[in-house]
Image (tube, rainbow over all chains, first blue to last red; front, side, top):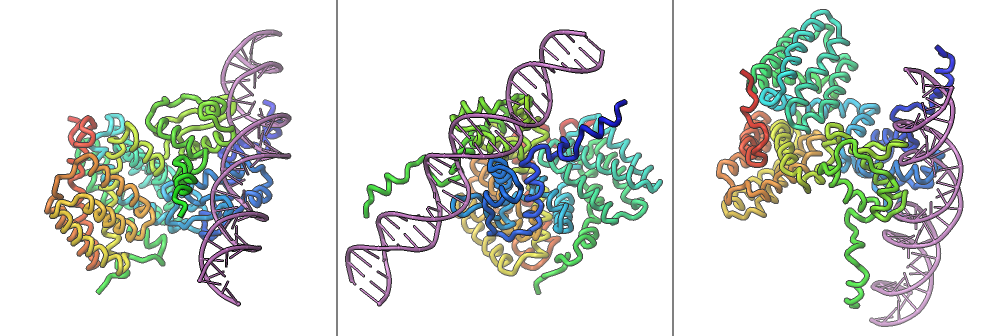
Length: 258
Length: 258
DNA sequence: CGCATCGAATGGTAATACTAATGATGGAGT
DNA sequence: ACTCCATCATTAGTATTACCATTCGATGCG
């Protein structure tokens, strides 16, 4: 009922999404452009300049700058202004910053870093989950293994992706390590990005399906070693994927001395 | 000359440390107490309350709240105030937050998470460094291996700690993965914390010294597999250390079903 | 039980004073 | 004439204050 009003009283600018506040809108424009390297380290903004550029008050600009400062993207000092810091100083684990980089030209490099990180963390996380997961989580993992096998054979990549994400998220969350758990959102981005990059075959490899089921089974049975080994097999193909994501980057045998 | 003036114009409160600005001073008090769990999730502050509590203006309080918000410690909404979010929502990788937790009652749990994380990441990082490190870094690692052996045998734990930190920092930085590199500061905290907790024997174990030298040698020779295996041995003792840090936590064989 | 209204708290703007950092100026000593 | 150094002026962030707009939960009425 009153369908006409629904469209009328919800102008696009007043959306209650992440851009609810003005300083978030400033961040949404300034953050990605700094993260993309559009401003060289050392480049200096002034508050007045940003004020004019975004047509907002000083307070709003300062709030945005404080957030950028807490991500260590910039420093704000009297007389100097707001200067961009070198990339090495940035908080590269800040999810917001990661998303900004994924949205821009740095996407392949960011996906590459994330993929390597996930390859390092997920096997120990699987082992930890085999030790510490709740009974309900163990059951859910078993079920997800079967669901993934089904949707994988059916070639339903969207459904498969959803189950894949939930599978890895549960594993990380149930590892009992909150830092592992904190990576679950980023792993989801990697898995999604992999699909978006068409790095997935039309049907997931049968071996990968079996390995996921094996991990689930090992966790269910409380066998950390088996879970870790099986997960290591799953992430072993990342070397290949990294090459496809960023072919220009130094590969496994580059720069080998002698 | 004018030595008397030097002491006069540099009062301790005006130090140019991290508390240079007012909002940082508010953060330095509010952040740790929230991070320590002194306010249950759902607890609501008001800007006016914080204003009075810290005797600062609204602007300053708002900037501090924005930073806490970007760490996902709190959300700020009209009518509701600034409410503390559940721990699961926090940006657990934010170095500032990690330091706040390390400074408070959560220190053992935080050290435990960090130790597990480092155990997961450092072996792959060592492998990557063997592939990608610069020649200068390979040389420095060799030298550090010898320095650690010397200071280790001499029982000079402070010097040893310094070399140990530099060793792991170089390895992470030269892995060519900026997210691995971003962990170097945190690894330094773990190593320092381990010493502070008296988890180190008076003389580092001879095996550990040999293993560090072996990692350096493998990286120097461009042997990723060897570097990774040796590093895995180094971090293998973390299981023991974790037990000592947090004896009450679920151990390797807890909750095993069946 | 649904809905309009109220009010409490944040969100945003503007004007202004304070303070820190830095480059320029000018004088003293060589 | 030249160097050195203290001092001052300039610039841009820092902080305060006051005021209005917006949002959203609660209250209570129909």
